[in-house]
Image 1 (cartoon, rainbow, N blue to C red):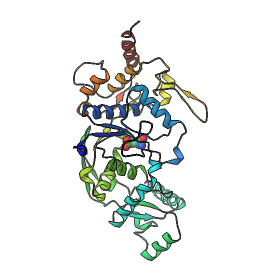
Image 2 (tube, rainbow, N blue to C red):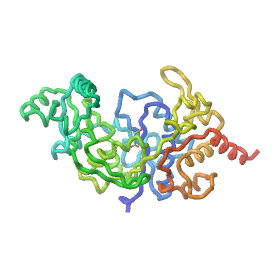
Image 3 (cartoon, helix red, strand yellow):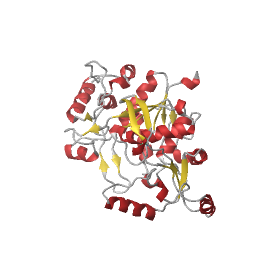
Image 4 (cartoon, helix red, strand yellow):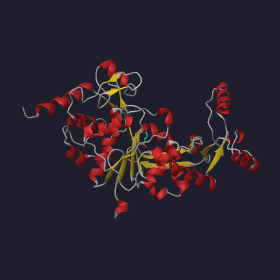
Length: 361
Ligand code: GLU
């Protein structure tokens, strides 16, 4: 049945060149989709217009093409029935869901200015804490929970800028089964009242990815582990929208680490140690600075993909060389390591040598 079809998306934000960690996220999603005869989708998450970088979207498309990680649907790969796939083009869609949450008492309007927020932040800092907009503090703020209805109506009628925030119930537990980390439990006291809709009418990532995953019938959402702390808020949003049974299985991937294992692999490590962290060369549109890519350094895409697949995953055997069809066959979330994966530039060279040697003269 069509509705049972496995569907995964890669959902990068076009904020710069695609890091090899991002390519790995795309690869694992692609492998799982193909293994199950499913679909792989490219969705561009460009709701943060301050961070938009010209050329980044095309770079993502070129990088996927070079790697042979080809989406069935999505920006640059033809429209399936869920177009558009660029979130900025879907803007009118999101507000109704934020309003639905207000209607059911799970979200509220907040009118706090940047200056108000700064004052609260400073106050909290002076007592050694960091400010959290939540059940403890929300009644001291300017919002539709703390203000009388007549005042809220006035503010709305006068077009006062507002955001819509999620109303998180304190003292509850939220649990889910992560495909990599297993059963995860959070207390809602550590979850803030996240902004769902910004004052420019754009959704935040929190709302947008849920609405899109739901509407695009995504079954498995693979993303970086930096999103794990936000996952309880996401589970609550699914619940409050009444979509719990349609929630995708989440897989939070461990970080790619520096060769010495200390910290996240960054562009600076690449520059310092002389290896690329990007699939293709990238020229910064403002500074014209060039960051080098595996392609331009003479790596074969098959070697790059093979190397990436084994950064944090193994097949349960000692096999190291895999073609794409073999990876599709062998991949499983069960064999993704929970700890971060140390990047080894020498190993990357080793993979390339194997593939270069196997080329015909
Ligand atoms: N736009 C998010 C990012 O680039 C996507 C996370 C996700 O895959 O849900 O981190």
